[in-house]
Image 1: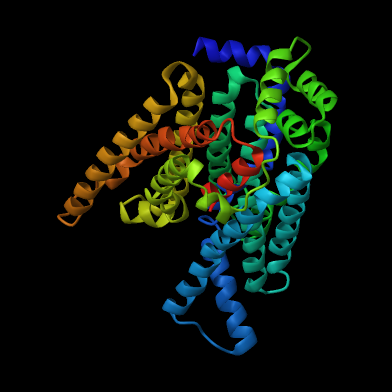
Image 2: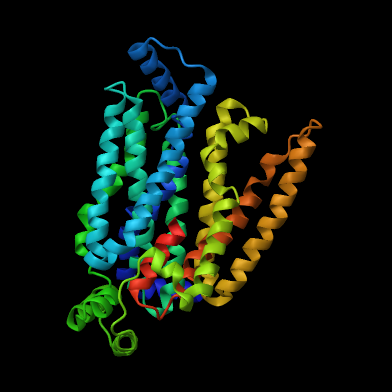
Length: 413
């Protein structure tokens, strides 16, 4: 931990760059996972009122649930679309320009959210969620590429973990701003859903001050002076010859390698094991139930017996737990190792999910215990998610960005 703190102190410019990239990057992804919990009653009321006024039709509960499920899940469809073309655009236009363009989608989605109640149109919320999904899927791919490529070798572990940290911060921000004392009230919920637009504007104003990725400038553009200038801006003045020479050797070895599409990467046998490893680790993370915990947290805690007036405060604990563990991983990842953290996180998830299964069955016998396992569950998932991104990058290290970018797209997909 002392080593990690000393590295951070010596690289203030890189820390600032990490904060700027995170606000419009993986923060957006995390925010939209948790933000719908608080305004869900108001959105359902809008759907019902719109159908009554427009079609003179009172929706049955199952129809309302179906529409609500579509509002929630259309975000994932947008995420798939965004992740599929993120790699190509990042390779052609660069990481910086791609992220700048991506913020326009966040602002457009925020505009839809703000106007939805005024126009009495829940369809605008669907469109906004779709745009947010494209924005988040795109940002998750490009942000990960950008921040890891901008990091000096000694800080790539911390850079990789920062992606998961901003996801956790986004989830916590969605829960915190969703409190009825802040933006979770009937009057302010459109502004809550539009908050991502403000984060997009923030990155639009600050990102132009950052240089392009040194890795992209040298390996993809062949711009050595630009690469040296970017290193000086990000890492401070000093001798970075060894890093440049290493990248030049990599560029010479990969001369003539073309950009790969996602399908071409899947068919390439030379990266088969790396790709399978990435797909397995990311699949375990997505299928462990973490997103369900956030998207349906109020229903889960209500079933567990938490009083209605305390539900929103209980959900804050899940976000705080994930942030704490993610920051802890950033401090110990360089000394402990990526493989060890992955194994520990996996074992903890197996143990906690087993206990969760037992307690859910005991609940039928009048016990109310599932809620006490939430912190342990979030801890296990956080250990896993904080390390999976960095493992992904290291498995493909030495490969051209033409292969690394579509592989990150597969990860997000």
